[in-house]
Length: 158
Length: 453
Image (cartoon, rainbow over all chains, first blue to last red; front, side, top):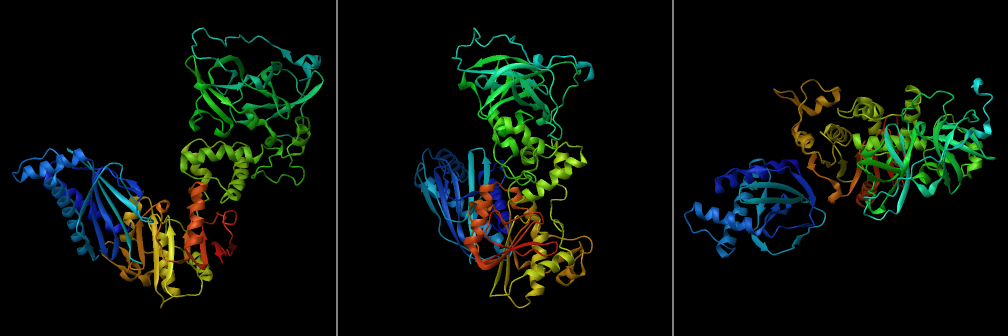
């Protein structure tokens, strides 16, 4: 993945998570993996188009998803949730939207034109996502609710 | 030696038979199905399968054979049968405690497929019986011996024993390695030979241990210390280096510390790495460049901090002022590649050539936006698949030598499948692409280049 794209995603993930969860966020070591990779259980996916083609995947397990959604709802003085219902799914989708949106804004400021597709949420066990021939950048984030992986796979439009 | 003249040579092998048979330990609950004779070498404990051991012996007097590798202690008359005797300590380059000349040396006589052979060790320990299920696969850090020669590691009474693979060590390959990497195998007779002929054959050999053994020793250390992989791509250089290293270090090929590994690899790196290319190197590359056809795409994996990428971009811009140029540079070292897009030179570049493509800023010299736009730096490990437009130039210097051979194959496939032929491939100065790829050597001056047609 193009070097210039990395920082906007890392910065957006850190600042948005810190903002919505009001807590300490630690980032793990960035790494690359082949895109045929298992998904933790709850994955919000947003397509990218424009100068590039690809997608961003916000990936976490079900328990983390419920706790993060609850924390976000609580900060808006709403009832926390106990299972991943419609409200919970919408909240996680919104989180993915916020992170990707901020990253794309930063990229615009650097002169790269990216467009977003509406997010989709995929849940299930033993899922695997595969794109051929694109490697994914993994930004692992650690929050009190658990682990979130931001998985960015983009390639230059040829 | 003269004082020993009266020693009866025939009695020189004293059958000791004294090793205590502690093999069946009362406490051992697991079934004992593997017995080994153990001995010490350079302070570590080793074992060999007892089925391979013909007898335990004390070697007294050898008949010295001139002009043999140093690890051949001599030949030996074992009740009428002449066998050769190898000193394992010398072979593995372990310290040899100074022996009194009259003191018989501890040793074993091993029964190999090819016949009997004697080996000298520091001292024989005993016979140990273990369950073969407790034998662990070897790990490179266990011994001073190349991992190829180890068949396993086992713990017994809080002691770790390294089990040697005697066939590997002393088998046919030793005769005069038909293995690649033997130095000038003096032309003829590189066939594996029965043990009795082996002595005669080694006599004719070089007065040094076979290079294949030395290279094996060096290669595992280099790999663990520096990531350097000895492979056909660089074997020629390594062989040459081993030979020089031996001369410089009095026959020793010990590469055990990171410092010595760096010293060993000194001279491998291509000149003009980690800096912008000099005029000489650039001119030689320029002569190899193909005719422009449409947009010229360059693949530059392992670009590190980007020096060579900028050199390539500036060179191409000067040679093809009107063509579209794109350099796809990637590295999996995030730290180095992240600095590449904004590299700044605090002092003047090594050649005036680059000044045309640079701007002077307050911090120093940087390449112009025009040059930067030709380059795309990626955080990338091509093992995960690459998406490149058809490229006609590959700059891959000193990268293959740090990849395991299966990944080298992957690079070869990526080039063969993804390139626009004829494709120019520039490798490191000491790297040879011919063993792994069907291409033509077009090297010129300091530049090692290949053409894939």
